[in-house]
Amino acid sequence: MDINIKNVFDEMVNQDLLSIVISNSKEKEKLSKVKIRPVLLKGELYFQVSKYVGDKIFHENLSRDDLLDILPPWFDGLFRQAEILSKKRQAVILISKKGKATIKSKWTSANSENEDSEQKASANLENIEEFQHNKKKNYILKEGTALPFLIDLGVMTKEGAIIKSKMDKYRQINRFLEYVEDVLPYLENTEELTILDFGCGKSYLTFAIYYFLKELKGYRINIIGLDLKTDVISQCNTLSKKYGYEKLRFIQGDIASYDGNSSVDMVVTLHACDTATDQALYKAVTWGAKVILSVPCCQHEINGQIHCETLEPILKYGIIKERMSALITDALRAELLELKGYRVQLLEFIDMEHTPKNILIRAVKRNAAETEKEIKDMELKKCMELKKCMEFLGVSPCLERLFREETVNEGK
Image (cartoon, rainbow, N blue to C red; front, top):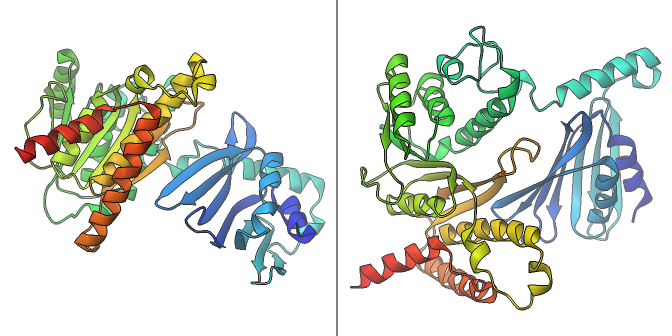
């Protein structure tokens, strides 16, 4: 381990840090890139580490000590470059093919070494405030701008202030809109887009998506919210008429039996329970949806199926089995969507301190640039690997059965 690399990170990983970008990997299929930024969690300074593995991104929040433990070893053969930026200093780490490290650094504040203690304390306070998760300027729906649907749904006051007990919901809505904004390049703005929200409930997100796409982005859209509860659907339709949202309507019904559309551009499902998520994903694929955004909930099915002699020593613990089953369920869903022609990412939807259901499945339909043979070869290999994995775990997830039954019916 190069002591100079260790010293750079020791000096720069603190409350003044803005970002670290680590790149030029020797094993891109293993880990191609890492991005790091500071965050505050319950008043404590942590660092969010985003690891890029293929088309997927994995996030974790680490303390300073934990981060400093993993950073230097990455430059012992995996990565060759890092760019570190803080309020006071910039540094670049370059590793030659022979393993020699070159470090270039410069101060971004000429007086940084001479600040008195009062100035330093003030600067640190500003930095901490900047990294707060609820920093106003980062939100798509701005606090202080009174939005009728957020007022009626109990998230905002008439003055545009966020009600304290609904702050988590406010963060959740804005976080979801960020993911919607990310997929806009895959949704053409040349014709009306059809969006379905399965299991919409009180429709916090449904109204927010309509407002964001229609009012803020100028898209022509037709949004349909679906839920089982008649009273909820009635209330949402009343509110939609009140706001003049002509292309937003709500229907009472269940995901599995809904057949009101033959094609859809985007499917949204937030916390649809257990296999209802699978039904929504299946419908989305059947309609050829360009984008799927799904936050699953209550993954009970695999928990009741999983049987693996090799893993039996750890699966005997109920809480471990439950959590493993939930993660396995979403990973299998992601792989099954890949087989159906989607590029899939499993992303952190919202921090664990806000909700335990924090994985978002983001799937974007692949374009036709790849040759048919390449696609078939990839799908055959992935299909065999997935089958082997499910056999090892002793599971048959709902989404896999739905796709399999579809294939059988097509063959008749």
